[in-house]
Image (cartoon, rainbow, N blue to C red; front, side, top):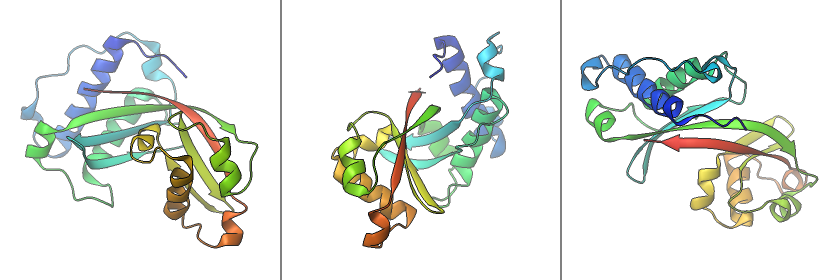
Length: 188
C-alpha cells in the first residue's frame, strides 16, 4: 500500500473535518486547515473509507471499492457521506462533530484467497490482518481490518460477513469466495 507522510495525513484529517463542518453550515467550528502539502499522493486515484467515532461508538462509515479520482477529493467526499448519509445512522450534529474522532482508511490492492466456502475461507484468513471482501454471485460485503477488534475469531468474522452480504442459504455459504487487502489507516 502507499505509505502516506505524516504532514499529509494530518492535513487530510483536517480536510475531512472541515468538509463535514461546511456541509452542516458550521465552518466556524474549526480553524482553517492550513496550506495543502505539496505531495503528489493527494492527486493519485485512491480507494478510501472515512469513519466517524464518538469514543467506541460508530457515528458513520462510508467509502468505495472503486478508486476515486484523487485521494484529496475522496477524503472530503466520504467525510461528508459518512457524517450525514450513512443509512444505518442519523446525520451527525455539530456537537458530535466537535467531539468525534475521524479515521481515514486507504485500501491497497486485493488478493484472491484460494479457498471456497465459509469454512475454507475462515481457515485461510489470518485473524487481525487486513480487510476482507466476501462474495457469492451478485452479493458481496466488505469489512475493514478494524472489525477484527470486535470479531477476533475468523469463523465469526466470516459468518458476520455472510449476514452482511445476505448470503444465508447453506448451499450459497458453501460457495463463497474472498479477497483480502491491506489498509493504511490513521485517525486524529
